[in-house]
Length: 299
Image (cartoon, rainbow, N blue to C red):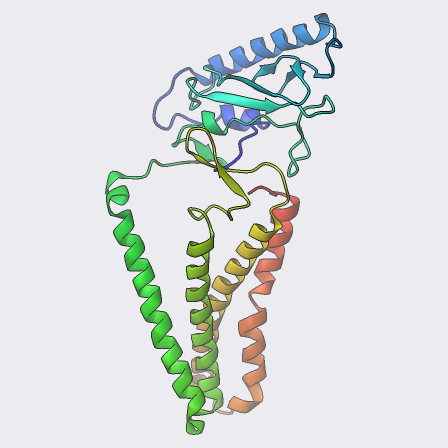
């Protein structure tokens, strides 16, 4: 489940009507401004709470106004009914840490309110309108999963047999088959990583140490921690996928060179193909890792 902070209020309010509009965009803006002014009025008029221990101060998070909250507790209030695509029957929470400060999310380094339970299934994620899962997909999801695993299993078994044969018979050892072997290996790694991903990740979202089921039985990400194991695993998954596509390209390039270049020598250029197949994906994976960690460091 994506963790929604809604600090980019303008982007949220400019979300166009996708399924049903509760209030207009202009009315939303007016209500937001009114609520903000009311909250700042409380901030300036009410003195800080000092009795009975530490308290987090009254604060405005961009959508809701949070009252002074005792340290070490979680403030709970209904989801706002003046924001489209939020469910007012659910609750939003905000944690006050033991030192009397609002919880700061590790990814954004900002105080954070948990609106996850408020968000309806068809709201936009990262600016892209979401779609409810069609009934026909829900009905056949189990069968589709079985078909996927069966296909990967048959592919993995066939590829392993092919690799064993090509390695066992020395007459098959040649540059052309070396390229074929690397292509087969990329498909084998892709099948293996798919089985691992489905086996160790909870509903494809994260490891058991990264997620939890909330009181409504919904799967959600734990806000604490770096979750580096999950990030590293998904980096490996993306690299293997990219390497698989790279080796398909290398195979096609090799055949093209055999046909079009008369002076082409297989053994002389074999190391170039090996480097291209396994290192070229890094040209995309490394920038992706850097951008995700510096610009969009969210799970």
